[in-house]
Image (cartoon, rainbow, N blue to C red; front, side):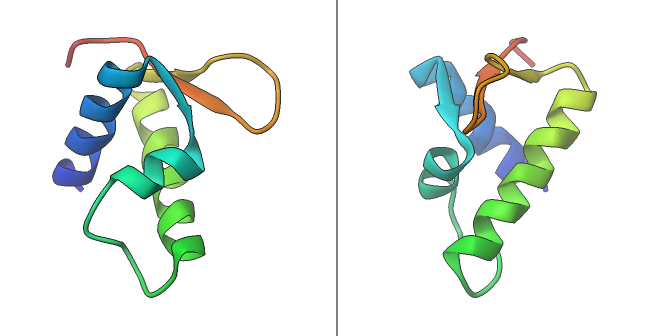
Length: 72
């Protein structure tokens, strides 16, 4: 999990904010056997990072755009 979380945090530090699907396209290796499964996994990791105070939704709009909150 840590490798995925690290890749997510690195990506968000480069782009500022991004949708779950775009983040999933960046993070490798693919989790599961389909892009949909991988994207759902990345969303789960983003929600976990949100609970840790490291990322947050940019606004209330859909699709959700995520932003990085911390340097950790």
